[in-house]
Length: 199
Image (cartoon, rainbow, N blue to C red):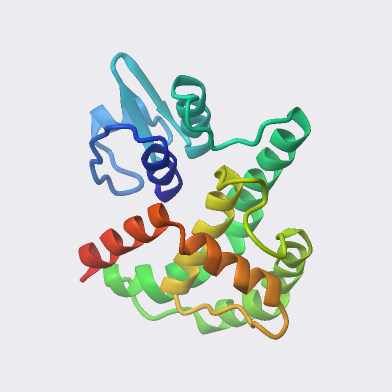
């Protein structure tokens, strides 16, 4: 959701954000998102879901401020980073968000400490090593912030809500990179709104 909000905000698009819980059975929402996943977008007669699909639509519809790099090769690399972020990176970081944050918020019991330890020791490191190998030494992946930066940083923010802090000694480039992305004015704006909402 934050990825779509960031892209729309960067592009200066006026939108209305309606909160929907994942898996909602609301018929109107299920029409937009048959899988019940978030986010979904309604734009006139168009209804689509999946953050990557929505961001592609916004890029094509509002191209004046781009969230993709210029060349075909760079766009392909950008899309790969987004895909990696939305799949494997989300999968291993979301465990911390769910176990330590969502469970408490929703009253779903205690965190599964064994699962958390397994992911932290046996799953996360290999993907964090990969992230460390691809993030830039300074700035963003390309000349300006793109969907690659947003997609890769968002799961890290969520994991932070769940208490995960990447080891700056082991992954110094990644830690510095994520701080740079989080310092972008749009990301600051979105994170401040989240903190206000969460109290």
